[in-house]
Image (tube, rainbow, N blue to C red):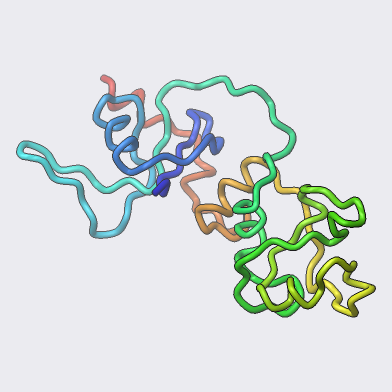
Length: 175
């Protein structure tokens, strides 16, 4: 499971990695732990390390600019927080606002999370034709927003204070 957020040296979200990969990066002094799981620790014979929830790379990694997060069914469910866009219950499927039968495609703005009942009831009709208004409009998340949503961070205002810091723990730990 990918549950550790990796930040660039500039505190920009880069990706998520497995716990094992995060521990390896910290042990190789390629990253530092910015936030750890409370009361959980990784133990070995000669050392103990806080279980990382967020790590920051010690060296800046140049990443090609991506304007949009790549579309995926899982991404739509995460973006909509697994809530049906029609009734608000738990969503398990993805529905096309403009059905594929009418020319709609797999895009961020044309897909919403949906429960199986509402997806079946709407069928190959638009929400207006089916009399099922959307509770919230679909949007295109930025790559960073998509990553933060996947980790359960509600919005940028909910980010912890350490993400706004610009201090360098790598420089002090390398000395």
